[in-house]
Length: 92
Image 1 (cartoon, rainbow, N blue to C red):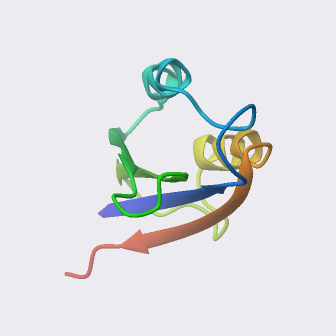
Image 2: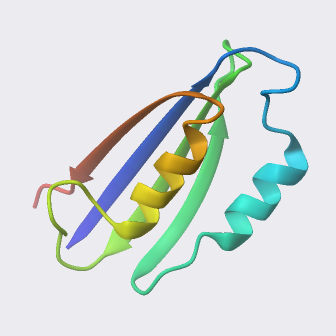
């Protein structure tokens, strides 16, 4: 079954707390796990300090709080600002 984890980050501002392009490239390269189909990073077109990371999985849905990868990523990103997490299952 395909399912998604969506992590949204609203950073406190630009400057020292911002995430630069190099950090994003390194983070995306490190997003690997068994049955992870894809990891995509998006920037909000109208709010420059908003990011969204979408992890796509093909396996049984894990416990309600999601994958270990998403939990670790969520904790790491909390130092940059507000983080919102949601898991979505594809409806058949």
